[in-house]
Amino acid sequence: MNVINKLINNSWADAEIIDLSYLNNDILTLKIKNYKEEISEFEIKNIFKLFFEDYLNDDISEIKGELLDDVYTISIISASTDKEIIKFSFFID
Image 1 (tube, rainbow, N blue to C red):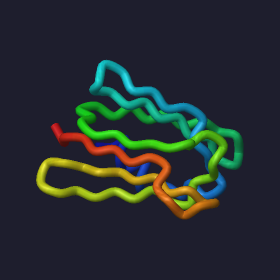
Image 2: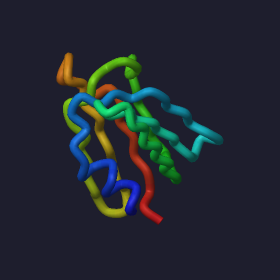
Image 3: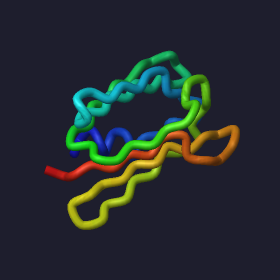
Image 4: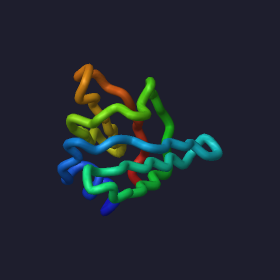
């Protein structure tokens, strides 16, 4: 859960998603570059639902998280369109 806390409880203003991969229909790897050009990588397991649009080179306005029962859903919102560019859900183990 520390990975999720770092992803949700961090200011990602002026950051952008530089890579997204989904392995074996289970593990999501997300790389975000902040305004200082520092790259953070997040690996989340137990993914069962994933949605994304054109996410590269789109600044992030915010990252939201919601826990309902044993399912956590994360939404990444575009700064330019104010719409979800990535949304995924996973089971908490």
